Image 1 (cartoon, rainbow over the protein chains, first blue to last red):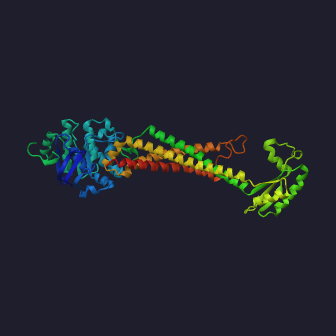
Image 2 (tube, rainbow over the protein chains, first blue to last red; image 1 turned 60 degrees about the vertical axis):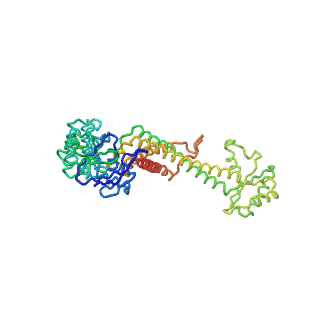
Image 3 (tube, rainbow over the protein chains, first blue to last red; image 1 turned 135 degrees about the horizontal axis):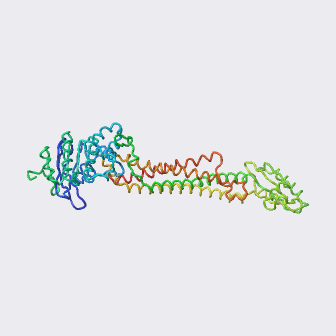
Length: 225
Length: 297
């Protein structure tokens, strides 16, 4: 699915990730944890190719990231669902259109997607808010809408960056359940979070590996969680 | 397209992804309209100078005049002698002395219609029509000087050259105006598109993130700016054409813009302005969009 081999990334003179190697198998569930500034977001950006590795090799869906042109990157991103902490919506479009946006961009017929999108909106519990604009949503509603948009193309891989960062515990639990459901459908899930309680709750329900970023490299977390 | 509150865009429709830009949109339409309006006048200038140059060339290129200035009693004899010489001169197709009536018509703009030409000591004019090969002006001038002392040959060269030069200069200014207007339109559209692209950097970033190709994102912006420019240029062109049509005709007394305008099929040329403006806007916006996209991975 994704394989990083001796990947390094620095911001100026400050190395953030150093010789990082990691392999995410299809259908796996991973948490990526670590203190603020440890490189969680940078790691995810490398995975969805917003950043290019300065050293090492990244292989996604069997393709060498360094050899992809911009159109190939766009096509590859249609197979990755991304949930940002700040959601990144187009604020002038209603929630339903934001959720449908990846299908629009991919040139799919809105008629063929209507049922899928209606179901997705219902699945994340936003049926009553489908016509609202993103700024009118609460933090939890925005995160659920972002998750719906991330999975609308039925991606093979879901990357979530602090998806529960701005929501209360009840909403965190609800979002986690949605991610677990997706994993049980065979999707590979990688969640960057520093919310240890959430990780513990997930481990009780799903076989999740917990990766800890420390000193620029990634380690498999032990029983200390 | 609505069903249970669910609104979806048309298939692959990138129009709605760019938020409305308000004043930028109005400015683009206005600038395109103003530029198209000016361009109509520049085109009218171009066509007019073409016609003017042709007319001057036709009227002056193959004609010459001999003026007989002599005491009144000698004028008929000298005129006859000059006509004889002209008949024998190679390159002269026709030569004839102007009648009193024709001379009166020539002087009417200065002295009015009732000038008693026959009582005035006016020189006699002989009009010469040249063959396509023309005649040897210097040789003819020497022979006239020897045999008809009161004859002066004017082959119009000193009139024709500056007039043709002026027409050429006007034509160059016309082309320069069209080029400057086109360049200004491209610059303005590029500025407006760049501003819109900068204001929508987040939109571009989100679209790339969810898998939009560069061509899709660029299309959203180019379509919008091309349509705005087309609309503005269309209105400006029509307004310009109406204004040119309302200009005083060349035969209207006091018409200082005599001859500026379109004739016959030339009226079709301004209709190309909106299309060219649209193409310029498309190219300028696409370049700006692609440059901006290269900054986003």
